[in-house]
Image (cartoon, rainbow, N blue to C red):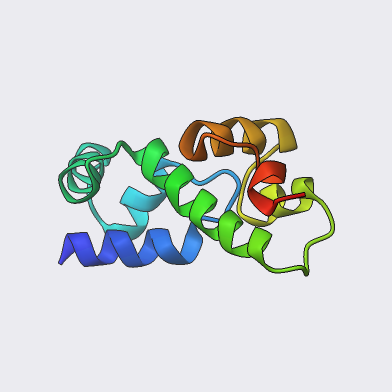
Length: 104
């Protein structure tokens, strides 16, 4: 189904820093509007919210390991274009900074 295609594609490609609604819609063979509607209906989030959600969930997983070197590195790894944007989105979703999340 389109929903499956969208969810699989998003879960495999959310780390691409410049991923857009158009990219995902084109890849899944549907319109931008249809894509937005599918995501909204299945997640109750907009496309950017869902994309950030996927990225922050992975960031939390990475932050729980000790393999990362810096907070910035984690942000880039999960697809954010800048450390400041990563930290802002993280705080917005988790009500704490990535640094606080790690317990440092």
